[in-house]
Image (tube, rainbow, N blue to C red):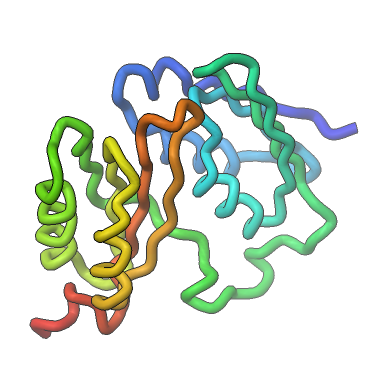
Length: 175
């Protein structure tokens, strides 16, 4: 049986904090065969994808509207640090920029995100909170060559998106 470390980030999230680094530090410190039971206020889909790339499987349980329990256990796959993944499949770095744009009306959130991306170096990541799915932003990101992952939180009220400035994107156009 896998031993699970408990990590509760609900209060950090409720206070508007970004516990990503704490979560990644916890996973980095695990002993072989050890897993994590994460408590959060939403199902962290981008995090789940990253940890799957690191060889973890998960079981997510919604305990209440703003209470999720996600068990991450090491899978049967080899340790991904043993072989370098291609850049497009590599684990995303910690966000360089965190933007809460939930109080803004369109098109201001898209304008702020695109403006920030123009100043970012290739490979840097921006994390943003939005009050709706940024449908028009997706086309702009695609046209500019940036990568992104995103989804609604467990309540379906806040859209969370991570955007990675990529080679050939707007951030590199001026170089």
